[in-house]
Length: 547
Image (cartoon, rainbow, N blue to C red):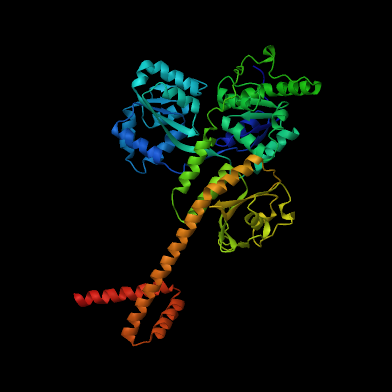
């Protein structure tokens, strides 16, 4: 076996969950570690699917449960035990057939003393999972009600194959993937790949590939990235990740002999120096080979199987129907204006990652900032812009989106606001929020670094503006109605309290009001609270009199 050493090569890893471990491994093998988290797990907007699954399991509705991840096992249990008894739920799991995709979910299940009847073999893609289930249950699967624990996003290929084999199939999502909150390290990684300052890239999941290219697309360099990667050593953890790379027309140099992080880093250290020289020499000579020749491939490294341009099951969450379902479910919640706006900001930031996101709502002749991605408690509800003022006001007046790739503050329409650090950002995208043919607000996205928005992103944000316009208007009107109703109730309470003071203290209406006003200022209580105290005292007095 060749000596394992990177010999000072600059090795990029996009690992998030085990970032410290992979960084230590790279350094142990003599590499310069550049570890940039590319993803984060976030909870779902609603856990209803998991809770419905638990209820069905307790009723005995299911025959086979398929767990795809260890994190999914633990997350599902945490969600379920908030409403159901933990031990009853675990006992119900022990009474059904259990399949696990590889060692991690199997280990998590066995820690809970849940028997595992089927475990897929390495590399534990959905294909190995399906083969293991077929081998165990065969034709009897046709009489089974099956549940699939999902992670990140649906795998349409696995769902299609399973639904054709079993009596019924339900899916239970427990978490989803999102880009990191701070995208700057990923942008710097993309720049490093383009300028040749990175020698080796380790891809450990298909999502890392997707997110790397998503950020590259935001930067306007997605078309340049595959070309740059041709002179860099590319390692893939296994077939699913290789398929995702093939989607971008990238052929990895090899997969490790086992789909494990330790094997990947060790074998990368053994062969990366030679592979890097070969690839760069070919590039210099103008003869770029798509793969390493068979006789040059290390025998301990399994060749990459032919890839197909599949989406590897990770892009299903971006399909049109899921997009519409996601935004409509947030709209259908019928919450207060600020909660609706906060949810919209969260959704937009996930669909089009940005450094800041503001929503301005038209109230009278002014646009008032009602929501912000970044904490601005002192500015939300305080900053207002006249129609036509600044880029945001121009968008509201002309009902047209504006995309500024750089130097946003130099645009002649720009207006700065004191205390708003985002005014120093470089790039900006604004689109109007429409309802019934009129503007009801503006969505404003900003980026710290220069960024050219794609036509797709501009259209997507415009579509969001059209989708959420009616809901923002509804929430605004309901909030106004609630405030009016509250003012009316306050006025009624104050009038009743004044009448009591007039009767008991022989005061005029004005004197009674002034007395309440003084109490309000001295005690630092609202007039409603003073009135409620007087009314409560009156009710207690009457109760004592009747007894």
